[in-house]
Length: 143
Image (cartoon, rainbow, N blue to C red; front, side, top):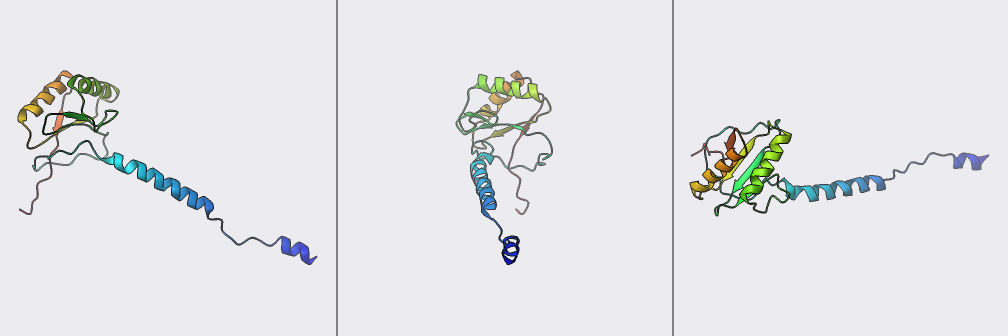
């Protein structure tokens, strides 16, 4: 009878292997997604007092123009590679066709010629974009 009692005793060890597996999977997911959180290419934005975007709204379509006039689109398959004007127009039209309330934002390099920004604004007009927001760096109020 003493053998049957010792066999039925509850096991008091905690198996932590499944928790380690879950933590490793989460670590890999965060390591893969962290580099993708960058919004487009690096441009030197002009400084201006402006209101921030509504975080609850749909993700904006962001068009970036670097110093040399190259166009980058955040909804492109590879947002770090410049695209031509026709591709940008068609991709913006397609994205707005799926969700018409999606905001369109333009990030132009502060040192670049104004002609680059105007050229992209004309292309967005061809894509039937009603409203375009200009992205700036927030103004430092301590100065």
